[in-house]
Length: 248
Ligand code: PGA
Image (cartoon, rainbow, N blue to C red; front, side, top):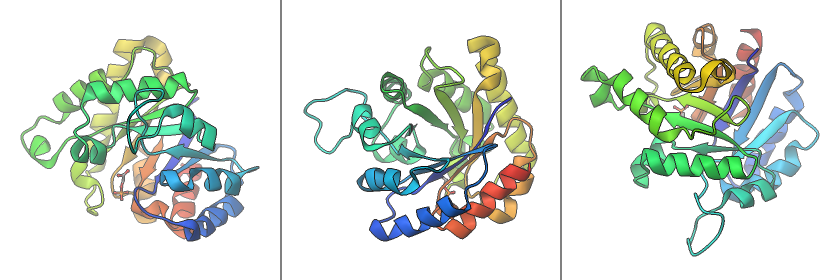
């Protein structure tokens, strides 16, 4: 009952030439069973929306400000993202939490701003290597989930992404058992807080997902797709990940 989602996060990568990769993703995107999302840098959102027009690929932002407008130099509001053609926004990515000091409360406020503009929030959670080694993973994830997810979250407006910080961009991936443990925990916590509707909330895994490991990760119960960084930059890689998700 949960639609699978393959989401690509281009981070601070890509100029106009990258739209050729998006075009190649569009040409391959025939699936209606799997949702596909690309979050390019903000400078490309409008052109990316034009590029994927008429295809099942959705476009999202990588961050938004919690406020609707105002004196916040360099920031982008949810309304601006929606106006540029975005239908999703990533909130609380670990790189934002670390580089920009974003707390759970800030992430929750940004997610609320997403809802206010009819954007689906992809709320990111993840433990550091130190926290994993100290046996704190579930406690950290539980705290982040509770603090970052607004009470207004529903299956329609929210996607959760579990991204262990130590697995992002490193080529290191948790074991299948570790992924399953955290995803089952997130599902149980969501149901505790939101009731049965939470069975419909998608939970993505993120961190060094590649064509070569996608199939085994997608076989895990409660893994409803992936949030992909590096391997979403090239159509050949991302299309292979979409195909693996489609086949799962
Ligand atoms: P990665 O990044 O796939 O390059 O590890 C994932 C992410 O940060 O969303």
